[in-house]
Amino acid sequence: MTRTAIVPHAEVPDAFYELVRAAFPHDTYDLRAFWPPDSVHALVYDDDRLVAHAGFLARTLYVGGRPLRAAYVEYVGAEPRRSGYGTIAVNEIDEEIRRRGFALAGLATGSPEFYERLGWQRWRGPKAYRMPDGSVVPTPDEGVMVLDLGANVDLDASIECEWRPVGDIW
Image (cartoon, rainbow, N blue to C red):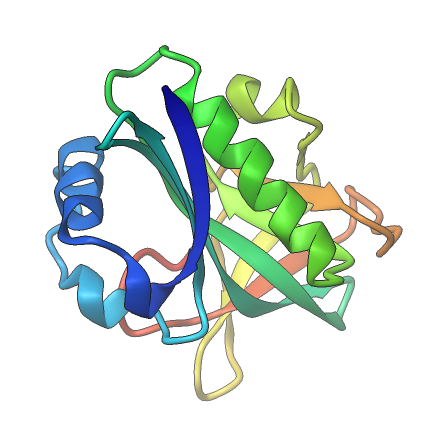
């Protein structure tokens, strides 16, 4: 039987770290340091086995220079892949993002078709990140996508995120 749970980071089970490591083996940094305490996770279980995850943390995204508080989705993964569990996890985290009143959600992916069928849109404009000193570094090859929940963003405008010390920039 499939069931889902929305939990704060403090309540993710150890199986979460195992699932994410299996889905993203090239990410070698400390996942416990990556997730801030206020991050939120959608967990999907098949019976008692954790089979999928999608999480978000709050970030500031700058669209056309305008700062927007956004839910930034990270580490969407399912085991086994192509089982439908990942879709369940994304749908659950999308609902939680809406419940919490975010007007914009963002993510970066190498699998845009998966998210497009769930209502996400590819960012067409220039992409960059802001360094702590204020300088802006272009990131043209990032697969940035957004879920516009009322922010009314222009997908051709520039989008920037802030640099972060752990994890990928996007």
